[in-house]
Image 1: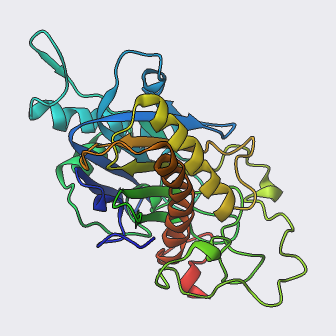
Image 2: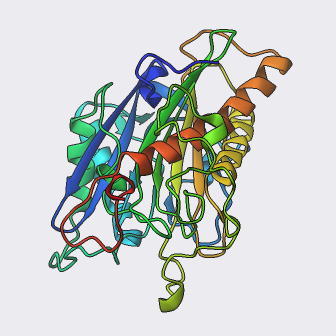
Length: 333
């Protein structure tokens, strides 16, 4: 297995990504646009999710394809960002056609970044609808990682969180990519070291090439919990998209999302807690023109896990320090 050319989710043909953010508020939005409607599914394993239009993604429901996915900071306020994405797409006459109307299908999820040192007194209306529009209108195949978009205000248990992405090209030529805004209650690094839990899956020193610490610290598996002393239940969440150019059904896309959650468990300790809203959307663009065989599908699901773990680590590795930070960036230590 190797990385795609850009080592980004946009190595999956048919996808573009855009960010928009407000550095004063310390929050932002990230959007994935589908060049053509893509098969989609979702799996929620965290106990505190915040979502929009996720029920329609269940395999037994009617709408099979979506036009975009929106990831945003802002807790429940951030759900407004999807409305901005819809406005952008509607202006291009993109959407699910009902008579003369085009209704853009934009499932979305949010993370909690209200307690991160940013100024949240934004007035009567939150900024997220406009951020969603800006992110969609600026979407491209190249995009930044770290303290950008939905990852701008993210935090882990002991470091700044961030927006991460990675891609993998399987031996059979199929491509899979991940995009993630990592804001977990737990830690992505082992104890107080710079080493990442995702180290065994790293390709081409993409997050420092440090491997595992040797010897492993005695406190490696001690739980590090964000805001434990403040009892801030719900002040977390890792939200992500796993995408492939393979042709998948809705049910197969859902299984891919489930497998990608294993990447959370490989990269974050602990994850999927009662106070995380951990969620993975899955997209199948079908642009390869190939439906995987049963054996190839197993390999694809395994790659979903490893690629997601790498994307999480890359998000924290790429984060940068900002004025008023509550926690240091990975590269500040």
